[in-house]
Length: 565
Ligand code: GLY
Image 1: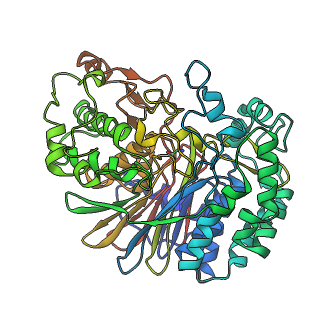
Image 2 (image 1 turned 60 degrees about the horizontal axis):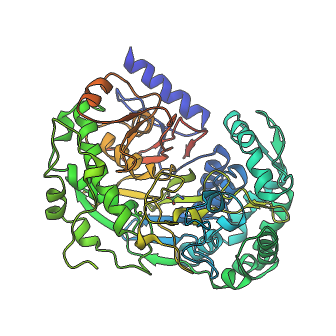
Image 3 (image 1 turned 120 degrees about the horizontal axis):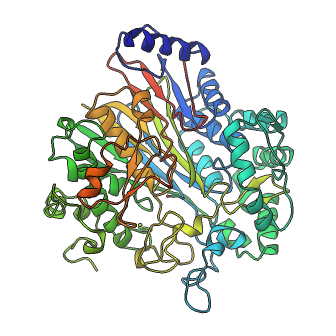
């Protein structure tokens, strides 16, 4: 019975998504299956546009640019040109790399810019409105991707997003709710009503005519239009009128950085993830290498033992994150020491099956000689065997809520990802220290973790997630779901998740998480928090099946969608 339901489910998904599929004999609930190429993203329009580019002969990098721009139009809470992101890639010959197009602090930013006269953090200023905005990196990022790896003309990649903006995007139920929830913030950030400020309902269509004009100018004049042209002027005038500090000099000076990914072994797999200024790769390595000595698959999935060992590894990794991690162009990060087996096994020596470690009794580890919710992720595999994992963000939903009306786009509130004051939590409850203090032109620490997994030198998984501090633990649990529990990609992304980040000292569980184990966990001293986490992350991932087919796992928590051919 289970098998027939599963196969039926697979066929339905494949028909809906117009995806050619061979029959796959399996007792797993599979996601969308494709033979050659796949895009999994937060919106159907964006996944389809990415696929269409590859059908025209484009590669994964061409598809990345088209998908990114389509998300800007169809998913404005996180898709963006007013924010930034990270890309991790793996070529078909095994070459790997990472692109950092994270936002930067403006030149006029200062360490204490969010402190009031009593020295307390005024989080309203770092989270909503013009002062929260970091210098955007997305347009520089996609032009750099095109310069280095693009094969189709840029015009071909931006045109679908222009058409989408002109024709309009149909609002989903989740999107209508999200937009309506943010109306008061839109008003307070912009000091007026904006295009998106009305009562939305499922089925409404939003046309972004000003955004289409902006994209058209970028199509004609290229990268400089955003950083030095009319769009730059629109941003600076609007932000400064609202009391922000971004200048023309800031935009003109913005540049991306190619970085070496963090790579490490977990059992017989190689994990490739984002290095600082993301904390993702290092924390992922710390958590997975801390639990590697345990025989994870012997613990039932999401059982007490499983939750305990992972929670204790997460607690220790996030304590290190808060102290050691920041922009590597500004601070010295002891990556090798933090991810070494010797250090990590020492960190876990006080783990006790009989009682929870108290976060108040735990701090960063000791490194001899050593002087830290709304984002979106998409995964792509192309017909040539190249793969990209991209996570991009405005930080919170709709970022700072500042909407450059004449340009038709939102600006980020990424400045809140800095540590405004040591020990004071940001919007994700993350605590930071000097390494992540604000400084002009510095990049704020991130948790975004676009990640690729290899087995025996072959591509196995492409994945990532939104969710602020919970990104790392969402990615980590999905890796374990596939590697340790042999789940299909769709099963893996659909499973309930949990999260611990050192402080606050509680395990956050999704509201769908089975509460059966909670009494025993409480007895051991774990604080359970199921109050504030209806969902944790939205993982969009691709798994290469043993027969070479691609399986898309689109997170059912959102409107996410997998397409392939
Ligand atoms: N803005 C969320 C992150 O970068 O982690």
